[in-house]
Amino acid sequence: MLCKTIYLRDDDDSVYLKTYVRDEYQKSQKRDCMLILPGGGYSFCALHEDEPVANSFLYRGYNCFTLYYTVGERASLERSLQDVSLAIAHIKKNAEEYNIDPDRIFVLGFSAGGHLAASIGTLWHRPVAAFEGMEYGENRPAGMVICYGACTLGEYSHELSRNFVFGKDKLTEEEIDLYSPDRNVTDKTCPAFLWHTANDEVVDARNALVMANALISAGVPTELHIYPFGPHGLSVCTDGVSFGQGYSEYIHLSNWVRDCCEFLKII
Figure 1 (cartoon, rainbow, N blue to C red):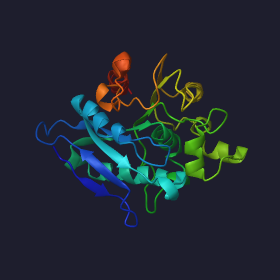
Figure 2: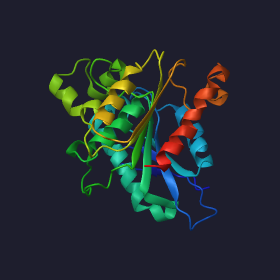
Figure 3: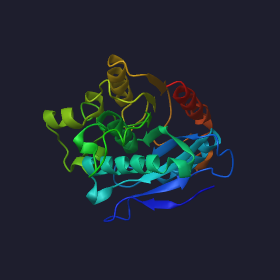
Figure 4: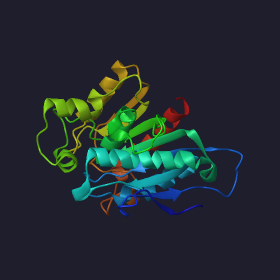
């Protein structure tokens, strides 16, 4: 296993990649890649949406990376998007070392990380996501996985994430049009797998519905799962990520990982 930390910005050692790369066998067979974006309302990156997620996808044949992107006082959508672009570009550039197919790099985000995943999936070709010297398409993911994500800045937006990343609690319609993932879906948008729980009390499940509607309307390959019950922040839905509360009643939700992998195989 190749486990190391890659710092992506010279001016900020809080922005880095953690690698979870199987490199000890089958070098001739390139693996798909999952870039994980933990949630945390753009104020922190949630640990239970890092290694447990990587382990679940490692088991299913992916090499994985977790991005600790810009959060807290320095957070802005432009900066966090550029963090993701830097991460994807690094992985593509070093695809041989990481034994991955550079055309099969997927981005997976939870909550605020889901907003970031949806943003790179819809805005990868826009200047807001570009870093200096980047080639066109160098930062494009092959697909996006959005887990209880904040996918809209409109009616059902998640206030905490919005306030942290934009520094204010109200956006103009022009700003919403410019930065809301559901309003930026085009034929350039990446295929998407989304899941949410209907009674999520933190991020309204209608975020997923609004985003899925936009994707389907644009003809983008999409799979959506709305589960009836479950709290926010379920990660891979096992007791090991439940902070001692126990997730046995939600164990069937862990099937999202299997369903996600099946979807990604066909896109």
